[in-house]
Amino acid sequence: MSAETKPNSLYLMLKTSLLFKAAEVGDWKHYEVRDGYIMVCALFFAGAAGIEGELGLCVPPKNHDVDAWEGSCRAGEWDCCAFLNLMTMPNPKGDRWKNGVLVAIFFGANTFFDCPLRVLRTLEIQDEDESGGLVFGSPGGQDRESICDAVRVLLTILTREFGAVVCDPPNDSQTKKG
Image (tube, rainbow, N blue to C red; front, side, top):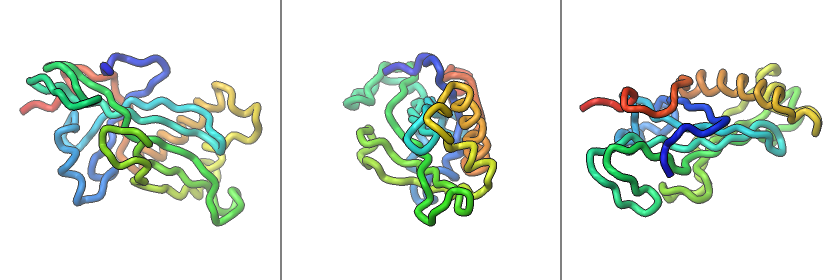
């Protein structure tokens, strides 16, 4: 799959050291588009309990062809592959108004990385404005405007937790040099 611009997608850079455990950060260096940052193509949508998303990993071009199962691509081309999922879910402690909600970030069920459904982080969102902004109050609350509002709240959380920076779709100027 090429890393062409996808409609309704949002491109983000996430700080590798905040997303992964310290012992794993080195494993992700060759996926970084800038020192310390990976890029994802994020698609957000309404889920059962609130905002959900798929975060495809944007893989910087190599100077040689890569023949690696679904991770194959030609030299000089960006690639995008299944990577992480994000899900808002109820907090098992109880009432959303007292205990907030959880946002789980986990590897997708079928990715190149062979760690299906492994949870990277579970964020407890107790701020009433943030937790309320991630959850849709009624079945009719899942219109485009409500989803956009939830994405804005989610971006605030992703920025705080993972140093998220909204960026342009992949291009050669974003590729780390050297």
